[in-house]
Every structure is written in C-alpha cells, then in structure tokens.
Length: 140
Image (cartoon, rainbow, N blue to C red; front, side):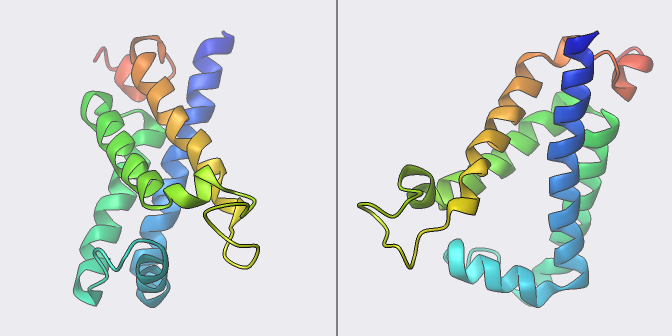
C-alpha cells in the first residue's frame, strides 16, 4: 500500500504545483510575466498568452491530481517541468553561488525543482502501479 500512496502524494504535489502556476497566470498575469522575463528569457511573456496558458496548465494540473489521462498528462508534465528545470540550470548546478552565480544572484529555493522533476519521472516509471488514480479506477 505504500507505493500507491506515495504515487498519490507525488501526483498530488506535482499536479497542484502546475495548478497553482496556472492560477497565477490567470489571476496575476503580470507576476507570471515578471517571472518569465527574469528567469526564462521572456519566453511566453506575452500578456495575451497568460490566460490560455493558465487555463491549459490548470487543466493539466487537475488531471494529474485526479490521475486522469495519465498516458498523456504524465509525459506532458515531465516536459513542462523539465523545460522549467533546464531554464534555471545555473541555480541547480550552483545553488550556493560559488562559481556560476554570486551570493547576490543565487537562489537556493530553485533547487527543489530537481526533486519535482524527478517526481515526474517516478510517476512515469510506475504509472501502471498508481492504483489510486482515477484512470486505474476506470480501468485505463
């Protein structure tokens, strides 16, 4: 029972993370744009993109929390969170600001992004054992 419960917790955590980011895009697009411009090189920073991207991200996140359409949502989640991880690679490689960053530019709070991405890979690897998902209950 520990593995299904662990997968449920991973699914809930990663799905809620996507949901929260999506809600920020919807409710506070300027905050989302600021993060994009500061850390992601301004990719997808257009104001007109925030609402549709936010809605898609909320739908993706909630589908993951519920364990729906896992054959599609888990890989998409891995790509989304993996690209986010790649965009902040300097903060992952040098969280203490010892050689790529400085004490002023380091951001230790980004380091857990590596764990979040690893969680998406665990969900992919053990999808068939995620018996507490809605997909499993529906026989998918």
